[in-house]
Image 1 (cartoon, rainbow, N blue to C red):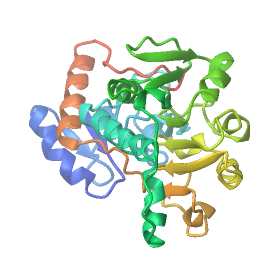
Image 2 (spheres, one colour):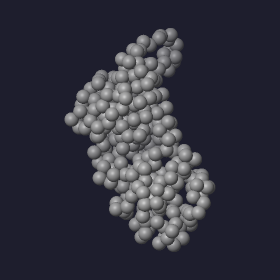
Image 3 (cartoon, rainbow, N blue to C red):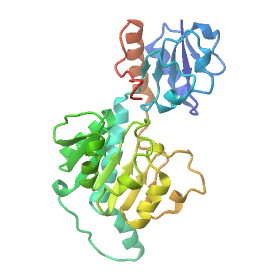
Image 4 (cartoon, rainbow, N blue to C red):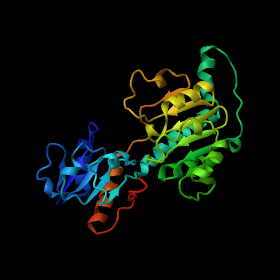
Length: 311
């Protein structure tokens, strides 16, 4: 029996291998692409984004442990064996970092800090008024681990927080909206929208002309999950029209973002290069080891992906 580790991110293999071997010293951990050995030995795979054709060449694969919180890239692989367990990464530090990033930008817009660079450039001394936090309506779209943490902490700061999800969620201090029937009501009341949805067939392109038109005039959008949630042309149009005053965009359909993409030069777009949160190898390796031992003991991993839902 062997475990395959596969990452296409530079430096990831060198970082993760000693950590994983420290947690699983008795296991034969092999590395894609140069140290796979006899692939019939491989029963488990630890993967972020699969290289084309790899999963289809592992005849005895029993389970996959994702390096990422999102598993859309794995499920989109035509070779992915949907009959075996897939565990997504839930790294405690990933949630902390994501929440910090979301809070940073929510506070930035709540306090009107986006105005001050222009005022400084014009040498204008002007104090921007802002409402009490309890009067600022923040909406978190997606109430999984990341969205729940962000919503809970924003509520603790005194904001009027609502959450929207496909499934009923009960979170202290957070007003819950559920499903397509309640999406409009959720967006109508949301001045600062934070997108933390999984990427599925149902959520792909969900931020579009129709949904953006449901937001109050001059709303703010903070998109931190997947680029494919947003229809880029519709976001540009909403920024141009003033429906969205500013949009923080951290993830994109094509990464790196092409040089000629209009987001680069749009004054209403604030771009960050997919840095809202990163999996921390030290804590992630420990999480992987726990789920691996559960699988070996015949138990389900703690964060088992529902293949029908896609998360």
